[in-house]
View (cartoon, rainbow, N blue to C red):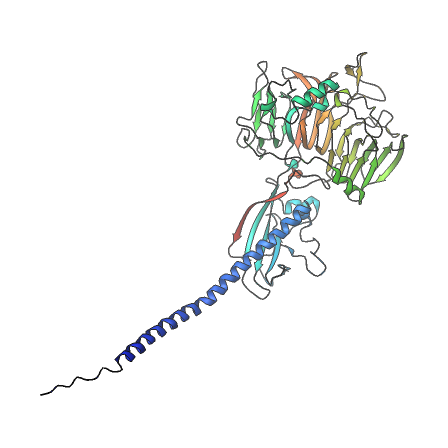
Length: 549
């Protein structure tokens, strides 16, 4: 019997079809998976665009705040970015009802952002009234917050919000700031001494000055620095029990050197500073703040809406936004009474040719009239920044410097006023002190005449900045003690400026310091007051708010 096998033709085709089927199933599954991810991918993309829009809004606010330190005080009343866009800064929204906020498009994008100024606990909105700046500022820390919300396009319901906390660190954060804790070489009376000190001591920190014969200045018993303190120098020199900081306040005392942050001035005195800070110690190894070298930019500001004078100028501030001014630009004094306050709050005194200045330890007030020196005193009720190309000198308007004479050397804010005053000199900010001299020209006793009365217990309500030199008392090393120099505000200087002398911690001449910080300077400035290089309002903390608003 013959067996015939069946033909296997077409079997390979079956295998091919099955393989194609399986492949098609994989393709379909992959497509289905990819198609399912498309909405997720779109949502992810929108979330990223939304957050990027919120970051763009934060950068918008930071940029404007760096251009104008008081931008935050305007709350939602800031100008629009341009004629075709709305102002995106709003009052805080509570999330109820229709969204009232103004939104701005990110340039070249459909994404948008809006900004809210967050009010503090005891208020319901940010107030532009200068008496209510605690509506947005935490007065204890000097911080304020904004909320920036982004969305991918105008019709989207997706939101992402960033909360940013701002704090400013600059010269106005301290009652006392120095770059170097040594006597300014240019404060010395004799040219040979100035040249030697300039060569050995200028621009050197304490560890570099050792053994070079530099004049080191100490804090002594009776000195009080009631507020935050910072020096770029290695440490502070102490004799006795000076007081730093205020009890119960967040007053840092910062040095750039190592702990403990102070040294004793020889074996003849103790070093037991009273440190009223939260940690009861100096903050060592703090970063330095670099000072600008000139206030010339303020001259440009004063040219546009302020007051500009040339040569020696004497100003007596008066309540009600007025001042009396005597100027020596022509060589002879020209006096104007009841001069209107500068519209932008800036007064500047330029040099009027070659200036032959005086040196504070040899001050006779006979410098050349061409010097851009501003003599100033009085009472103010409007904010002002008074700057000089040479020196700012706090002095009573006696001595023939002004027809309307006064023996009052104080600079005080008027009672009930919220005004601030800034004094900025390229060179020295000086407190006048006239002394008698012997036949060798050495100073001896305090002068006491009708033209130049002895001035004791001087009060200065101001932020003081000496860019190249010091805040100093003229002839501080001469005469009997002048009691107390009270400064309510902030002091910043390149070199330590002495205001008196002492022996064993006891005053011998000049003033005892009583400096108290004006807490408004944590968050406010006199008009156009200068900031440290690369320092302004900074974002110290930011986080995303969930859920967004």
